[in-house]
Image 1 (cartoon, rainbow, N blue to C red):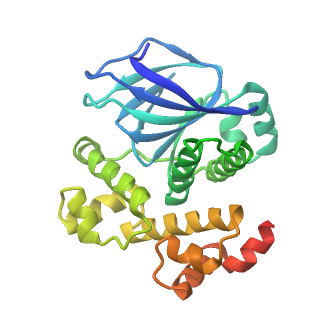
Image 2 (tube, rainbow, N blue to C red):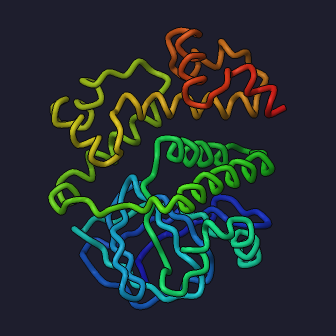
Image 3 (cartoon, rainbow, N blue to C red):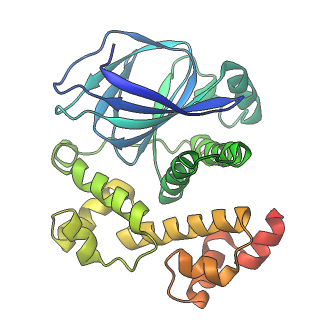
Length: 284
């Protein structure tokens, strides 16, 4: 078994959210473990290899691991870096509904006897949703229905990626070995400070690399620039506020880090093909 702390952060009728913190300090191979649930795992830090039958999936920041129930797996910890993950574990009866909902587009994975787990490239939007869910469930007396709704929204976006068969390609060995901590720091900093006027120099300095080198590394991990990542996080957070609050659009814009209402409305319309006001009416 893996030496880890596993805490239940939130429980629902259909799923539970787990905080998984590994304490392995040496590269090791676990004993076979049985996966009894459909799981979606976001890697926040660390680096591990997930082995199921002949597949070896390298999980790290900016990757999402999807694992089907009913199969044994082995985990290999790499470079002595214990991993920290959020695991969304869905109950068996919900998994049956999931397969029906995304049939036939998702059947290549959900019902394929030869594919038991896959990696997807994460996106700024998914990282923002994941981070927002974690922040909400740490609030005292948090609204369970709201959290459930956000989790289903997150799952739907992940399933749309899955139906598009956009699986993640392995990164070069040198990039994984030497630069994963850089991306972990950058991701955490953006999610914590997206409301602020972040500069490339500030972000690169926080990660202890030059701005030029940082920009190149960031694109290799995220397939977008640091600025594009930041704007997407801001827009996704604004979208959540439009859905869940009655705050004025202008207050949402400035509260999410946009320096003008016009800039926010233009960016929102480009991203979602609708104005913020019209989007709120659609969701009402």
